[in-house]
Length: 315
Image 1 (cartoon, rainbow, N blue to C red):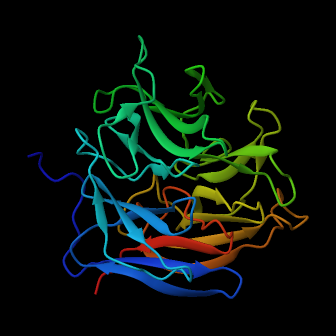
Image 2 (cartoon, helix red, strand yellow):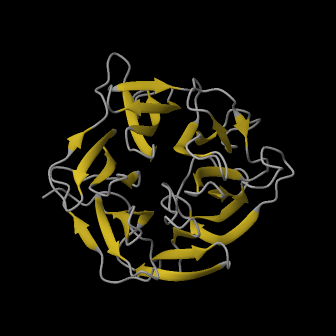
């Protein structure tokens, strides 16, 4: 049996899975655990299941129609994979889990089974892939593409990538050192299928680690900065209807997206005419402790009203 994968809870720490109603600005606890580091909640398309990861495995949580927990966590058997991380989604048809492990993205049947690798092997350039988003039809994956050998002294670069599953073609839309949290989603309310690529990046940072949220078209055009503040912004998640953008904000000076730090879940109104300017109001949904694993993938329910995220408080 493979050893447990991932980190452990600190003494006195627990995982709390929250469901936040952004219209009423209220939240309720879906699940708590003092045993597992639960991470990255994402909804199945039916809105009746939440998928999380813990200890290298995916776990599903059934929900009632009113979005309360309807049963215990159920572990998904991903066959030979024992190191699934917090970059995972459910396919748009609800038939498969898409998960990241060992630097690749895999497809696993909903009930579990042997994985099928979706990302290409590296050529001369060593690459690793981290899943964060997908097109509405599931035919294009939005990836963070890491180049360089981890732990080797190589310069590590992370860029925006789109993988066309039909053609097996990877397109890299940026050529820089620090992009992450790549999603495909609505550019705003009423834009239909005119999706944007959302991501966080240090593209215009004046100090190391000062990541902000950006969006652009899937061909790489019309790059636009969305957040403008001293906090460090990660993992932008547009709601399915394009009205809202949720994201994680660390305190100033934090580099990367570490665990066990104070952070905030924040919300932007994409219907506001000030989108793309520093004048856009920022709404704080919650102060949390953790960061890594809180919202690495899109946690919006299909109703675009409820948002799931994880807090890892101590005491």
